Image (cartoon, rainbow, N blue to C red; front, side, top):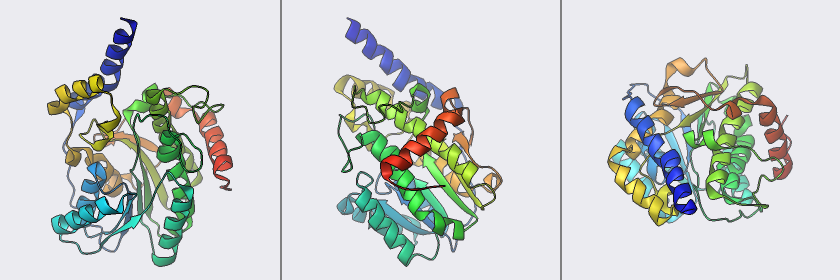
Length: 315
């Protein structure tokens, strides 16, 4: 009985409330902004909102680098992006965010072969998965969703700065509202709750964005975090059967991947955001984040811990 009550509570908080949020606040958005001559990197661009973000930005004339872990899937997605956009300047490159060696290899290739990176979209992620560790020993959700993108951004930042004006976009989630940063057990080794670990990683995305924006003031590079909405994506695959049943029932009210990509696209191209940085967006508009996401002390400590764990220096 207690377990059923806890499960129902989780369903209401984690699944149903975001749907209500979507029903009340979804707004259509469109823009004719062109990106000719610009280079865009999108992680996890072989599926879901990443793929439809790639299609949209390719239609705007951008050179697209689809950074994907599964090259077999990415080749099919690459063909779809090219055919849908009519843009031949689209490429796929292997990037496994669960392996710092792969991240460094990808970044080295970009820094060597690309003249510029005008937009970096840190989109890839894992959600409420069973406990596992990355190649470097990080808990999988904090490792992929935060550490991997933290390192990637660090390694590409000099090129991004030389490409200014430029933008860095971190795809977070409203699930951050239920998260806390456990600096003493960031890898959830003492205890593991997959929902808490996911929420922690999404909170880390926003804190990273805030800290990054402050460090980039005056550089011509801006940073944004966003909630895409409750989207029909492969991220649902790790939910258990009761949770999947709830998501199936509310599926008609969730966003399609095309709709879910709109806030990412908005942050990438909206001219009015050129003078904004470090903010959080939802449904193509500024949104309120949790008080924990506004804690600059925790943000700084998370930054320092991330640098230490990744063995990098980032002033």
